[in-house]
Length: 335
Image (cartoon, one colour):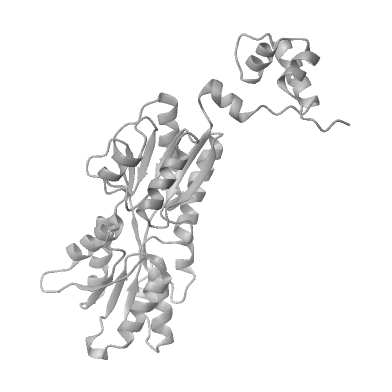
């Protein structure tokens, strides 16, 4: 048996039609008789003919592939986000090309350049994706949708989490449980989401309560280091609550506090942000702000697919609502 892959010419020869007719039939053109189309499909199946994606893209100018540039691919937040994007892409018959910038501006720029010509459109989530960065690195004719972007006047569709409102709500909840020495474990200084969550924390503090800021980096290790710093303080100087800017830092902080002999929430109440799946399984279960992570990814992909079909991108911002989820770690009454 020959191992040579069948070509479109082989299909045309066996079916007794022209190469152009085979191409039209396989691409769903209407100007092919039903009997002829069926004969061509049967022959293609018998010969195990697989059309060349590269050749098709030259004709249609579409790759049926979309790109997603994310700050990282590690952790439950990005796993959930990718799940939502991938499910929506598969429903649309689109392939997904993923890249991570590793929180580095140069790598983000290189990834955008590398994807140009390989994808029909882009989803971009990057702390570096401000107005200047996008104008310099995003091809002007490539449809794009931004996720959690700090761009002031976007010309693309944007999907964003209500970081400010969610952080203010969480801080107000901690105050309502009787906490007064509430610290905020922040994220990277250049990160738009981290800045918005800190702003919400400050807005949620009542008059007379000074903000207490702990430096974090959105990693589990950052939470552990913050825990070690708190354990080194005299008991009277420790906060009575810590609001971490994301769940993974809160979980790292929780482990550090428990290992150091402190009780959560009796000695220090604890809260996070995102509601990643593991947040409900740690002990005590983590109070957090629920972000519809997978839904945001899916909706962003749908918006990008719509832009590909219409060859236009609507400049509009969709703010994804967040929800307070009260669990045992904050000392409040669980929902």
